[in-house]
Image (tube, rainbow, N blue to C red; front, side, top):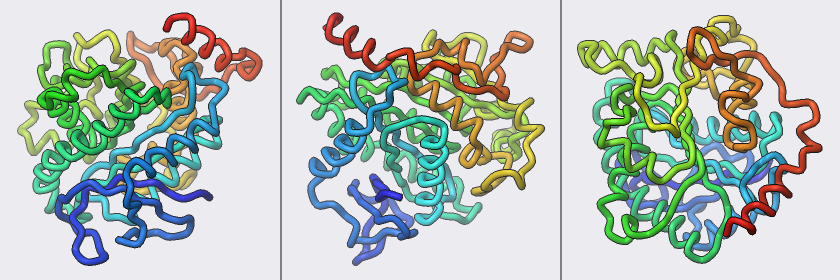
Length: 344
């Protein structure tokens, strides 16, 4: 296994990183190491970005419509200690690679304690680090795009990480340099999203900055998510969570909801790795989910036609399915490069 690349927004004290927000740092954690500290910090953020882009561009996905390589940034949810974050991003990378996705996956690690009582504090920390994600992470991406970088960058956010993501895009619109520049991201996916369904409506001011900068948005929902049931109850039931009930009726044309309930109901928890609450975190370690996400990020197949989905009662639902048998002979990457050059 290769090294794990991490963008950390945790405060550093001595050689250790704490459960408080701090300046963004870029890290490279060797294989087999399950915790990070000051020894793993890369002093030059530009060198870190260049290395990640080099790995992604050197492992181009033949099924992706991106003109070059792909980078997926994983933004975890609440109550994740450093070892949890490393374990999850490594498992996600293993799952995606097994399902044919090629590229580099990095983690954005924000301070979220592994004690349930700290949940509300974590939301405040999430708002604080969203600004750091903007000023250091997104700004660095924007500068790379100005320099001609064609690496496709995507985001996948879990639970309260969806809150961090929406807030980061919203704050980016308030930064003059970022607001005026033409930076963009490829795709964004939410899993077990702990944000209100209405926050993703077409009329929502909060989510519009995100939709402005991305190509496509996928919300994976599961009506059996017990953690989000509690989250909804704490809000007196007035703000149903997107990761449990799905998207609202009127949404941006870039958005699609994939209802995972029917599939999830038949999955044996003992059949796959379980990292955290089963109903809330089953996605990471599940090969069918990884297959669907892989084809989603690649962008070559229309979201309504991805073979791991079917339409049921007017909703897209997750189902067992495989990649198209002859997809490897479609020359998708060659077509993408030719089309990109022609359109430019």
